[in-house]
Image 1: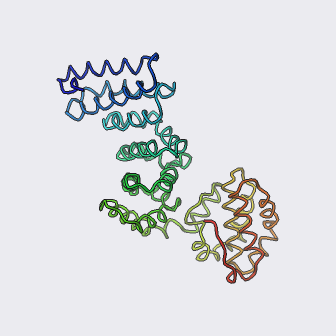
Image 2: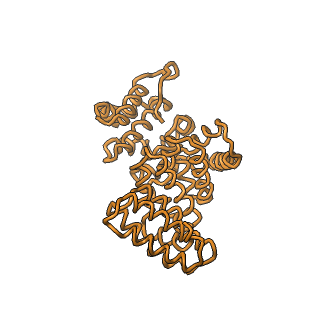
Image 3: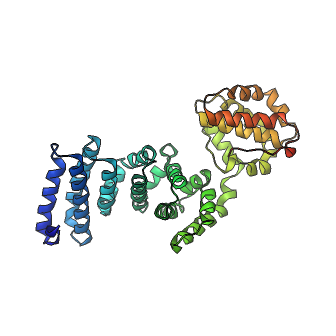
Length: 345
């Protein structure tokens, strides 16, 4: 470590030594892990000291890191910890985003959701990159499930550091209209409300939670309109969110009459969609329609919706089976107000 205190040339020599260790396949993975973290830490410190010429070396190290991780020469934890240091270099951030490697980080969060340190370092990487406009299209792409991945980590770990970095990420992206829409669709409002009911030592966490809650609440009605539900149905991709809640259907059930119950007809079609989630949400929505709309169950019977939902009760998927069962209960029972039971949201 003493060499790290020498001049610029001395630090370059240290980097060369560390890189040789990373590239030596005869060494243990523990050695590779330690060398990877140290070389990224060293390059980051040099950059912070004003030596921007180190950026070129940073590109080389990024390529080596990616290769080493793909070949199994360094662990996932060492890889993401190394990236946290390396991505402090602004130029590297852009290259990293453009390479598409952000999707790998999102994949790690799902793959290693039982590993707090991996998840936390992935969150830090996403937060660092959230200052770059280039990452917004990746977050906007619903196939990447970026917001959903962060929500799952938040639900699993209520640690202060996880909540802090997640809030900082949300705060950075919430100003983007599409990202705001996804945050509302993913019901981040509920997570934020739950977190606000806890005690936090860090006042900044509370301030960020309050800001996020207010922004989501102010935009909820605009982004949970019936028109938005119609668009989801037309796109044939249903996602849990504000349009698939008891409150939404209580307020909007009359809108289902439009064009001779066209949206109900489309939801019945989606009961046989390839996506299990879309099927489950279609069951939920049709059950809510039957609950609130007078003679709604008669409409569903004419469209054969009731029989299709009944068949879904035999599904091996527990989520679909549960939503089908709840929907049938709502269809079959005429006076739902007398019944109290669990609703899936």
